Length: 108
Image 1 (tube, rainbow, N blue to C red):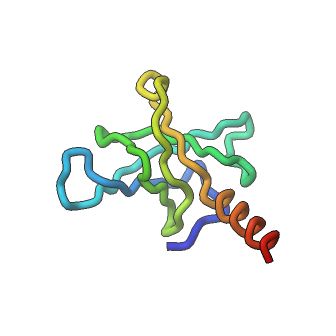
Image 2: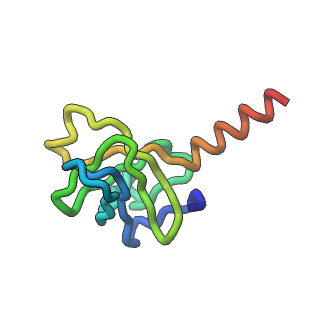
């Protein structure tokens, strides 16, 4: 699955992750992407993407954020505010890849 470059806030997004109750199958459930700025978009330079769960299946650390066949984020550990805000943080994988590429260039 390729890493996506531009996340569309209005499009359907999904989280793929390990099941909460220990079954053998992965879960696949819809989430709503929450923009962190007033423009209503996710900027490419943002390192954290926030989502709000739309089902009763909780987001867990290492779950994957997907949209239109591309991978956008990996879930971080929830903090103490997550239950009250309903927002779950995902690390922007595009930022991670750019960081790794720049580190590889400095090693060569």
